[in-house]
Amino acid sequence: MNRSIYYRIINDMTKNTFLHVLKKYSLLGFLSISALGLGSIVSLLTLRSGMFEVLGSMDENLTMPQKIAREILDKCEVIGERCYSNEFAKLAKVEDLDTSLTILDEVNKIDPQTRGCHLIAHSISTEETLKGVDKWQEVLEKVPADRCTGGFLHGIFEARQSKDPTIEINEQTIPELCEIVQEKAQGGNDQECSHIMGHLLVVVKDGDLGEAAAVCDRLPQNLQYECHSGVFMENETRDGIVQHGLGTYIPWNKETTQEQQDICESYDGIAAKGCWREISHMFTFIAKDYPPEMFRLCAQAEDVENVTDCYLHGVGVTVVSSNFDVKNMEVLCAPFSRYDMFAKCVDMAIGSMMTSSIEFASGVKALCSQIPNNFKEGCYERLGQHLVRLTGAQKTEEYCKDVPYPYQSTCENPYL
Image (cartoon, rainbow, N blue to C red; front, side, top):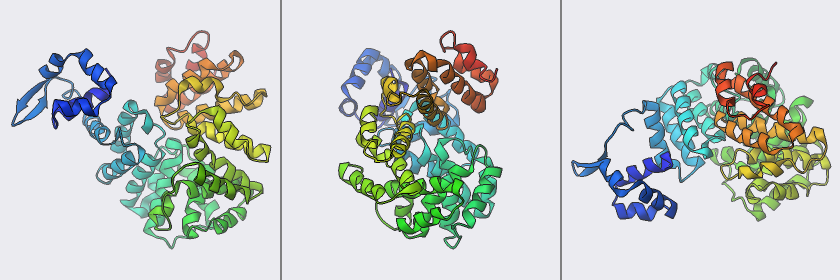
């Protein structure tokens, strides 16, 4: 029986009638309870002070971070990402950064929908920075910037901006800030920084995409693309826009996606490239994370480079989605017949998963097992490289022990 379901059932039985529990949980849950045996469950419970209390060693053996993680899971596992983001914001206000990260690790182990974790990371680092905004560079040095797809960096700069809206975000200050990120952040780089600055520019320019994009155009060339992508992504996700009272969230459906597509088609050059890349978030959503449909939607771009950028970014988005079916790993990179492009697609998928959470190692293994044989060794090698970076050589061997022959040694020793 799924351990998280078990905990939720037991938790509900402390607060509700058994009939309520049966109504709340699906037929699968009901069958799981039946298989476990009603007598076995009742034997775990006792009536005390008018309430049920769980007996046994299961809760006693949990660490405090694990217990807090269970409480957050109880609140958010059904509701989803924004609930997690809110709960971790509350947590980070009263706990230190290391504790918040430890609890995030525990939640990641149980609920796959938290492994993308961008919004959660955003909340954690925002609250950590707000404890002393003048020390934002110290927070920058402590957060795992290469985790949760840049969410920790985004939270730091958002907190800094919200505390002092007079801080200049323009073509002069963006390269300076991104140089600090490159120098001080663990795994951070100027590209992630430039992307975040694009988000912030939309807020600084009061929601005017044209003015924000114009600033991106004046940046050094190596920062322009990511800046534009941040601008157009903000217009889709709208977290900063909403937080600063500049607008509301938009539903993601065919109509709103077409509106975003119309915006992309009104730009050209690097701005169009950034826009088509970011619309992939909406494409993957309305395609329900099904790769062939994602590619069909991206293929509406006239420029073949924009089609490629859209789909490759969509690959990175969809593989960390809790709705993605790992059986579709086989067709994930099928649109690319050229060896180098297929390899780039595989690398995009691996990078997205392993810079989100180490719990995606199983997803990478599923990818490696389903792609053609001439790509398998490189796939397992990239997995091993990420594992060494995240865990060290010794734990890498543990993660690679179920990799099939003859690729296990490649995964365990990726730099030989």
